[in-house]
Image (cartoon, rainbow, N blue to C red; front, top):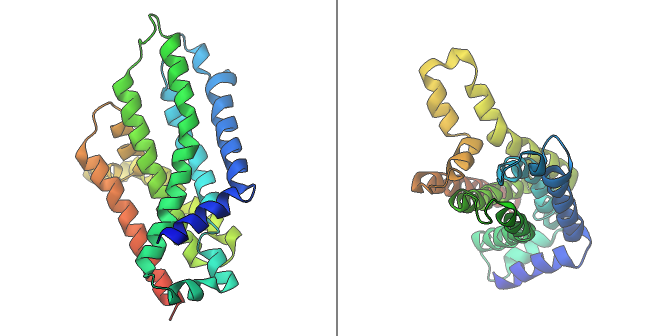
Length: 242
């Protein structure tokens, strides 16, 4: 498992892909949080990171499938998937190694944004006048949401050996689960079913964690979604290697 993890990490940082994705993410959220007048927190007049936590999932929704699209699709295209599975390595170990490596890259994406928290902390009047509990909960939610997007991306990468197709499928599934469900739940004809439908939407789970109280139900739900998509990836890889 460790050699596959190292191979995945080396594959990221030996090419320009990881650096480009990190630069795009930090530039995009940086401009939206600090520069663009419609979203800049400097225009709000109070110290709050809500803008960042509202916008970051939409940027990650596109960038994470770009990270994961090659993970399995490239192995299938080049035929190395059979070679990997001839090693003393189970399909689950292979999937988990790739999942952890991709999730680690998401963590590295988010680490520099702690500078935003420090800046907001200092901008408070008095300094430190910021809801740190809410910020902590939102970061936990963002990490878990990133894990969900990684698991979805791996599943999308296992569906088709074409990386572009894997990227499109990954973005579509992430968008559907993050935005689509809650949007559909807002339609009037659902009646009493609207609430349970809204609750299973990823954006509802993410926003609940950002309220400053980490509820185990939200954490378990997001971890369950990760597990479901990893199981789907394992099922798909079983079919590919028959």
